[in-house]
Picture: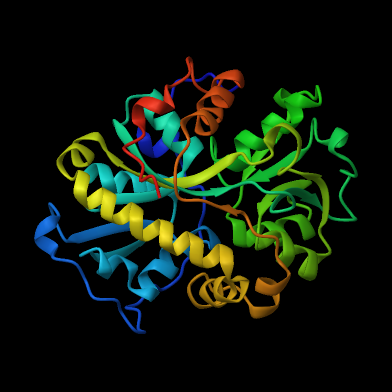
Length: 329
């Protein structure tokens, strides 16, 4: 079912997320910037999908960590991980936040030659779930075959991890009707009976529970998909080769931002309320994804290996070849 040849990046990696937000210039005290002449370029455009995955980047921008590295970071908001990658390929952005599954599919198909810059999030317990509602015919995960499942897009994490969970349980994936639904619309689609179940990350799990009484039937952040790599930052091989010092500066600032949100739940909540437009109540109640900045080749290899095992790509991709130099601290 998943072996059909995809011929273009935009169709292979269709919209994975559809949240919108506004990332304006940030205030606060700024550490003194290092000399920009140390970098290949001081201006850096980062294309993002505005989700809670961005908390470390917002923290780094807000606290002036990028400026301290001599970087003037411009945030460009796209409406999907596919489009952030497209912008990097076209030269409209330098670095993209994207979904790892979409990136490795594109790499496998020759859509571009990517290099992996930094990590962003992983699937921690209770942060990503397949949910249903009381009126749905789906009561347990074993009921999924033959039903309509909402996902964000083909080959996105919602697609790949739902398939992985079903495969692990010996369930027939070929009988599922996959229904692409933007994340903000999934709760309503469940309530209206347009789908029988839906894959949701936070904060949508918490919002759906509050608004339509959504009930989880399986926790994606457990079993074989525990700590599965979800999102991260990437660029093209050409840009990475030409700008190693600029990339290193971006990585160092992002590491500091990641440490900040890991150490301060209150800071993280304020950032996602401000930039991801999550309500204060949801921010306090939601389960957080795993935040990280430094890439590990063995862990990231799980993504292309899973894509290959599911028949989504014809052969696995060597993640280690794609990872740029990672800071040691």
